[in-house]
Length: 341
Image (tube, rainbow, N blue to C red; front, side):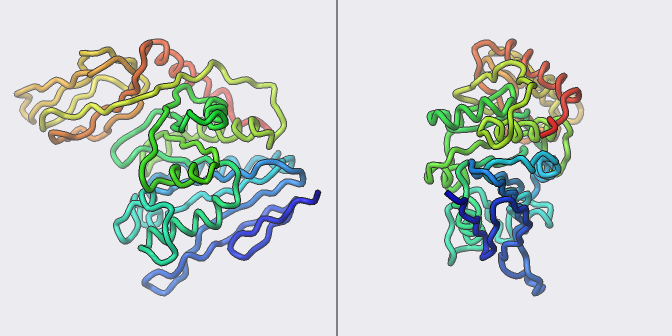
């Protein structure tokens, strides 16, 4: 049976084609039109349709480079199914170097959206109807928020066997069984019964090479797991460790933080993770681990107020094993570029 064309924003992409499409979103206050950039690579043979998107939060830019590297692979000519790449979803926030849209709403709390709602709601609706509804699987690329950094990790609903299979295939050492948030893209996609992964790594408004390498390799590995790309001889070293829960450690005082642990470090309950003191060094307030685990996120801003989130810890019973796997994973990155596909 012949493959059907993919229709996006009134444009048709046939099997064997590779096209860039500008999805109209409206106009700026200056009168200029604004578009959602999309690139569709459609193989000649049947297979899944995978959407990969980035910059839903406009200042989380590392995913834009991940998608560029994936699209640059010459072997996409051997693709089965279709890759629907959207490197910049929140175009408004991206050009303004901000997480939000001009209406100060968070796009990732605005799904499924509405064609007659707020600006964020309208963009969410366009993305679901023009991109997600044409796909069978999805990957959403994120970084930490501004002044924070994240260890490369996958977040997913692991109760779904297909989602868990792809989360393991992505190849990062830490996978989080993460709850859904109301209004998130992940919630809207899973309500459509579409398996989806969320990749978190790095820091807002920064390019972190290790996080970008890990993300590009992960997308490629998922495509191989879906049989969209031919198999490769290279193997993923080790299996990911799965955390069923995580928690934030917050500041119990106000002052200047001297952090003692890095991303990927193993921590034990009661361990001192840092010290908060005033500018003169008086009144030291220790920051203590609440449980055993591994640091998967942390603040990069030393100036903290009481209640600020400082360290994000994934709960593991054997944190030293996880930390060792994280260290080995980073050692492999520079020696293992994207496979030639």
